[in-house]
Length: 493
Ligand code: ADP
Figure 1 (cartoon, rainbow, N blue to C red):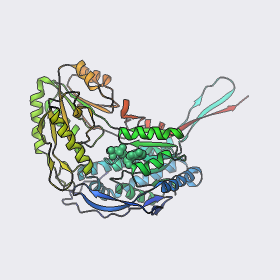
Figure 2 (cartoon, rainbow, N blue to C red; figure 1 turned 135 degrees about the horizontal axis):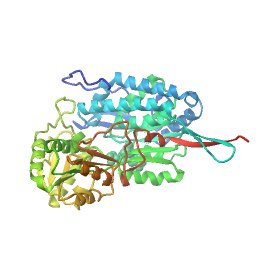
Figure 3 (cartoon, protein in one colour; figure 1 turned 90 degrees about the vertical axis):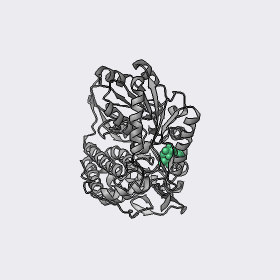
Figure 4 (cartoon, helix red, strand yellow; figure 1 turned 120 degrees about the horizontal axis):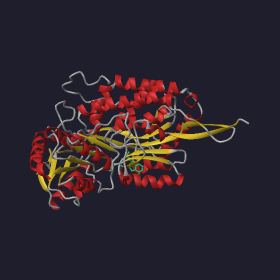
């Protein structure tokens, strides 16, 4: 475990912004066309920095730098073990600067300082896990017919365009960098336009760690411009994307022209099923965490809460009592449990769904209101008596809004849980071991949590069934998406 967050810091001070440029070929540069955009503090709505904005011309320079580093120079010939060493060094530097990074993450993204510190632990763990893999990615010898020796080599895919979202800026960076670097690829990363700051600070640490020029490049900017330029660039071999399902459809179509490899980690409308034979206290706690962790801004949020009818009334009462007590406020205050949503756009979207839920006849049990006039805060919200066809039960809201859907029996709830084009995660609460395993087998989701929720570890594969994604991140599985397998056959006759 990384040792961070042990010091009791009572009032965290506003961080200093150290870097706002683009990183191309280990140089901090201004964009060719001189563009810039503002980044905000979601807790106040105030501008905190102006950041360099990449256009297609900057993307081209970054891709060329990444290609050069891939094909010549120290990275191309480096021993795998030395690649691992660089990654360990980067993890150490992040750990050394963890508190600064956690504060910066909280400041730019709105997550509570406690959650941000947790993300730092995950970020460090991920880089160390994949650093360990660097010299363990092996091919096979294959018993072919005839007098031949056949073996496989696992080589880097090439230049990887990585496009990440705003909800877990550092963790998503680590999930993308870890396997890519371990396998010897080079990177052009586009952070989300809402949250570019921590990626830039970590890139400074990567230079300090000694990564050669061109291995890691950072291009801040918008999706339709910088992101699109990366997707259509012929010098990019693969796009690794985390974000909205509609964006992934656009990317897949555009990537088709160059037949790029793509991996997608997308949204969800995850079913969290509570059977009457659960440990009620534990299930209420778990269902609460499932929806409200990071203000519901998680692709795995347990937003469809199926509760067995027998316990529905008591369950909703207990959940509502907790929601009313939740401390919503300044994310840099250590006692805060819920910070702001990331942007005005997200806040408006959530309020739209709250109104829609009421119009469609769901019962608003608690919450539903914006909190304060400054920043993007919203009350934890519960809808009861939701029906499957309602928009609040079908669409990903990406906010602290849970839909309680009553059910009567196992087969019914499994069918309803699976009645969605999403398939990222699912939860189940029961003390009956048969029920738990039968549910885990039947539910169509890449991750199933039994009597727990949001347990994500760098060692276990993560990704979606159906339209929640393609490919897997984390674990050994992620390495398959960052290597090409080459068969070599030698004539021994
Ligand atoms: P959200 O709605 O949660 O912001 P998006 O899918 O729009 O999710 O954003 C996730 C990432 O995808 C961001 O880095 C964003 O800039 C990028 N992005 C958005 N649109 C495109 C696009 N057309 N091409 C490439 N990247 C895009």
